[in-house]
Image (tube, rainbow, N blue to C red; front, side, top):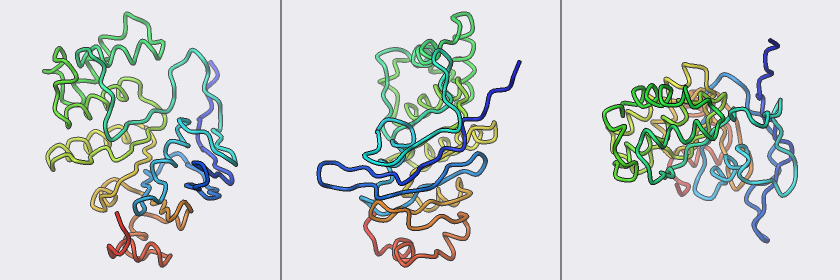
Length: 241
């Protein structure tokens, strides 16, 4: 059987996004490559979450293009996924939340429960498989969202502030799961306001300022020796987070 082409790189060419007269993303040209974990940083209002949604396809650019290397095939599991700051939980058990995702990915019925239980075990929720998803804690719900991803093993995972408002223990567990997904071959693209998290999880940083791509550097270099005055101000805490 012929191997499928990777959907990466994802290419953005002169991408703009407006809401009414307000321009949120301003002429961004870049690409998201396979391999390094990409962290998107920037002050409040820089356009980080909007850029992530443009990449994932939840928003269409006002101008410019967002194009994957190869198109996804209708009827096959999606090869990219997104986890939000507040994940949507179905009014079902934790196990059924995962099997539902597998059903919509056209995974055969006979395989769904086994894959779902393996995914719940991987994120430490196997003991809560029968619990209603909506009564789980915030950290447990975020792990359940990652279990849905784990079961499908997408090529690319976009994450928007996945540990916002979580305590340090829950944050550590989420970061462990993200690291294991990456080690298994999933490309990570993560928006965060947490510089410690950027250090722990990032290989490269895309820094946005006022909707523009101000710079893109290896994570260590950005955090120690940023190139733009806006990034210097951001790292000093002089720009709003």
